[in-house]
Length: 314
Image 1 (cartoon, rainbow, N blue to C red):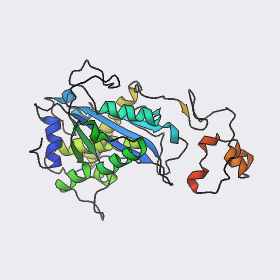
Image 2: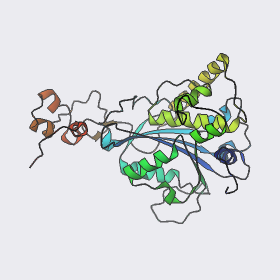
Image 3: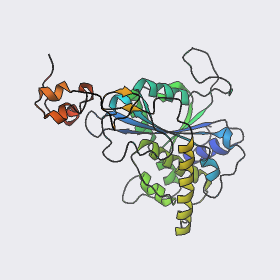
């Protein structure tokens, strides 16, 4: 892999080479817009090169895209903090699950620790020495995401030792002559448009990473930039809807919970329709109206994120 110079070639090698045994992991994170900018979502897309070995990509990389697994994690500790740019619950490619920060860290470590032998567990907590498969780490802006994971989860993906190469779709797009519009680097929305992909909800970490993986596979499959016609856009939209529906039809991932109340910090039910009695001592001490005091638990108070002066408990 060292002799491969460009990121585009590295991605193509990991996907198409008969001698490669790569896992392609792609990650995106979303964080709350107010200080201290807590991580609220993680999006993960996983492609096993064994699943597409010897398979041609197809006209729209559809044969590869159908083999990708998509995940959307919301962080329990910060579930009460809104994603103001989009919809945290609007994951289109599968079933969203709630994880604690510790659970999210463990899940990501497992995804970067695939054993060479299929019958061995990815749980390394028992201290077993395993031979692990190489990982190509993919993102739209890889450095940003690795920095956020270090800060939020105390997780250094490089320290796991399986990442052979990190590649970014922004860099690959530049190498392929796909230019941004009035920006130094191309945004994900523009990159999708250049490939005929219609986007419905961005800034949802699960959706963002699905589109990132889609663009990466298209750029790996196509040597030259493709002229996008209205008919091709319709074809891409139909195929994208098919992949989304297939992802939603799968069972939820084994990690985390599908039901969690961010209002009360409890598993087993959703915030919508929650009738549990809650009371925020911080809002009560600050003299807030009753509707606000009884709308959330003390440890789910958002006032601290809006830099308001809240009296501290003794």
